Image (cartoon, rainbow, N blue to C red; front, side, top):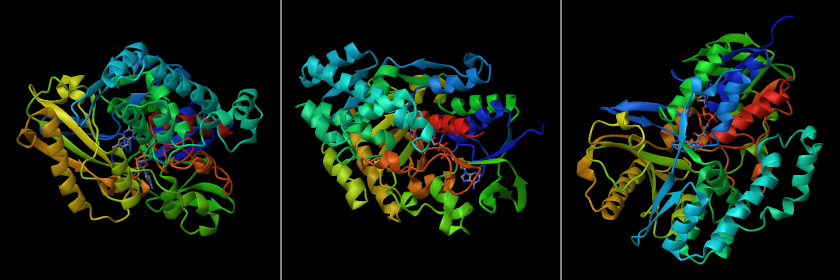
Length: 490
Ligand code: FAD
């Protein structure tokens, strides 16, 4: 029997994972990637002796990565190694308070109680609620397609559906957190989880209070060789399974034969396949690769609000800071005002919350001796044509002033090299519409249902994976999208 052929458009994390899964199913798989390297948003670069992971810096749910090696009959540790973090994040507040989020729940609760004065019992109740939401939602919203009848015929799905009234979808994340706690520091800490999928805690449903459970219960991790080693390990596995990668190969068109995808056009050449999977942002898939078929565009889905984007300064710093950890947050004094600027005024608040990631804390060769590699990020709106040069210059100054004040040291003179990533460059480098980090936002309680399905309902043989489709953005969910696609493909 002839081997079936699959084409994957894009070598983002979901595209690579889909390629592996389809190869395991017996498909001959070719991946076409526009860039000269794999990984998409998950990329890296070196500058003046410093190495930087350019995109994701927090690894959760690494079991979904291990699963790919096991599925292929390989030993994960032969390809990819990681360690669990003892302190997940170090939070700093404008009033001088700081709090370490320990991975161990009891230790975290003790720390949170002593810093914020919130009773341990209330924090425990909150964490239990987060687990309860996860147990109800994961079968329905994360691990399976919402768009297949088969999903709804399973007993565990039905059980989850019966329990849906208990997932707290009727109020916002912030309102729920403010009901649980009196202390503003803790409310802000838990509100921040909305940013894990580029949303706004003041409008996103409290169902998203499930996210702390993923981090607290399953842990946070650091890959021994840095975040980009996720990509190198998975590409190696894919190649070992016979997948072929074509770089500098931008797909120009999905070629249709009546109502079915027949293949793709790359460099003017038609390449035929039985299955076409787009890992490209779904908005651009329709607007660039299927632009001649506007009647096939799911306009309502494509018109949804996008997730937020990011502004990142990659700084080589000529000093080491003992008080900093791998993940650090310097909170804004007024979180509501910050989100209003991002979501309503479409610009950047003068006192943004700053996320500072320093991989050289765990991987010393990421920086020269005595130095640190600072990945300094703030959340910003998606790109709708703002005057980014002005916004970036002002934000840079505000970030430096804030960090200098809270760390008690003038930071600007310590910067030995700099690169910047902003919504425009995220969009141009990864074809992510408006430079959004996580596809569409989760600001509405219907967001999960309005995300694009993993299979086209109008074009046969066309599938979708990655952060812009179900179940959403972030590495773990992208890996789940690959799983859902491979289970759907015959
Ligand atoms: P993408 O990474 O979007 O890649 C798509 C690929 O398709 C690209 O390589 C692109 O070049 C290619 N492509 C596009 N068009 C074409 C075409 N026509 N032909 C061929 N190829 C094409 N997630 C986390 O889990 N933890 C984090 O800490 C985290 N932090 C983040 C920080 C930043 C700054 C960013 C940008 C993202 C972050 N994320 C994080 C989100 C995470 O990176 C993404 O959700 C995930 O990597 C998206 O993967 P994807 O499979 O959707 O593909």
